[in-house]
Image 1 (cartoon, rainbow, N blue to C red):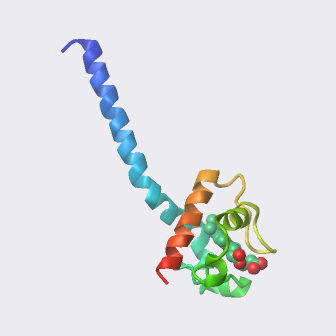
Image 2: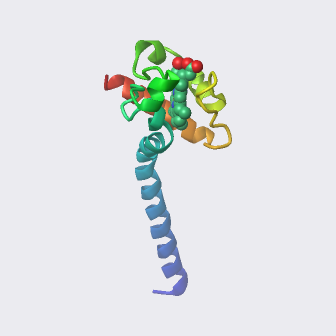
Length: 112
Ligand code: HEC
């Protein structure tokens, strides 16, 4: 095999590998983001039944009240925060991550 072919093959494999990796982590990403950043207050199931969640008055993210809000509204709350206690994640999470979290909250709503 000549060297340019070998480089081509190596590049192809590297790209294929990265592509696989990124599509695998995407779904996991939102779940692990939620677990590390949000579950303290909102509880792993979205119920808000943690010590912090109860103290701060986090609503059940699975409830109709939250689920009937538009994606853009949920996106806005995560981006800009809400009230005195829900932190703003602007600059801390990317727009894409926030979008994935909104999708994750929709999934929580379906598991109710
Ligand atoms: C320090 C605790 C805390 C953390 C951490 C936190 N939240 Fe919240 N969140 C709250 C509280 C409390 C409210 C309700 C605020 C209110 O009603 O004034 C809220 C509200 C919300 C709402 C809007 C619900 C509604 O009433 O419209 C969404 C959506 C939300 N949080 C998502 C998230 C996501 C996603 C994360 C992680 C990136 C997160 N929160 C992290 C405490 C927290």
